[in-house]
Length: 276
Image (cartoon, rainbow, N blue to C red):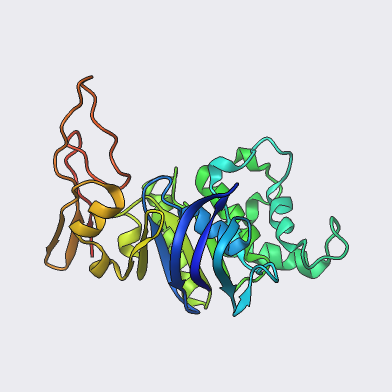
């Protein structure tokens, strides 16, 4: 996947500008930045769902303006209408619609493929359950299964670890690393610096444009975080560990603390997560 001098957004407003980014087959990339920085917009530009004002978006060397790319996409859970009356199996089978000329009826081999993926994700026993009856982690796996059932080489995930507990988050990251080792190229957005981004092979810091790109050990610097979040976020390296924290903030005139960039540490909870 490659973005060449891309400016994109919605309704004539560019959210991202002058973006150059190349993702090679087998890469695992995390898009990092505050809300409104353009993370989701970059995913939508790759999908062909954002307005392109300048440059080119290429998937497998083909412009998305000429051909809609075949990629797997997992949206943010909060954007989904959980009252829609569908079961786990029905949600997953939606991922086969591009390959099924008989939709909404599916071939036996399509159902077998879907159930194999559900087995791999550990949720096959839930295939007849309504999606709103599932936990956040289970719902995330259902939509991951829907993306994987089309056998994509490129997988896009929007905040896949948001709103789930620590154990489920770690299981999700472990699963994504396994998929990556099986040859799936992954691009995911995240707000979580220490818990998620620091564990990825490659990260990209965004704020309307690409500010930095590379391994976390190189990208995670106070200067980069100052540009990305507009806040002082000291980076401490000690015995192979990287600690990302925030310096104390002053309270405003109302006695309220200014908003904290996601992934940082506030004075109210003086904590920094250690990552290897």
